[in-house]
Image 1 (cartoon, rainbow, N blue to C red):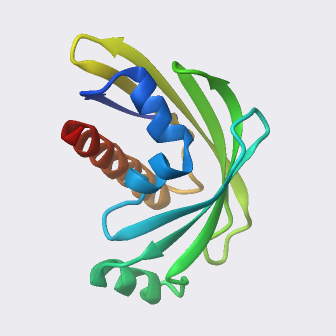
Image 2 (tube, rainbow, N blue to C red):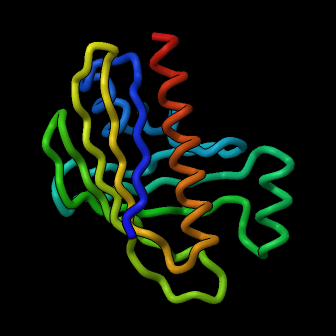
Length: 155
């Protein structure tokens, strides 16, 4: 079953698109609470790759990563599958960081619609390999959207 998160943020679709498709933009809000994101490569085209590192910085996230034998910094890759500026983007995340689980890809589709208050964001995500990891995915994406909303509210 596809997971869906919706948010309205106080910025134009063009501004949200910029924050979602540039290294500077992604680094400013992408990381879940207690992590830092550093983009090392972005090829903004279908089939293009987004590569970034995510580093645990808060004590509770560091403890979680250590408890599950995961490194504090992980490199992540996504492959863009669709880019329709400034309305829709989609990417497949390479899930190769789950201990004792074969790597796989997970699709996320983001739709941006202008509304009176700014931009309505609808994020659809394929579930991960089990309920626990899917819940973590949804919580992480929800946190990211909260970060994005807070960032554009300061503009």
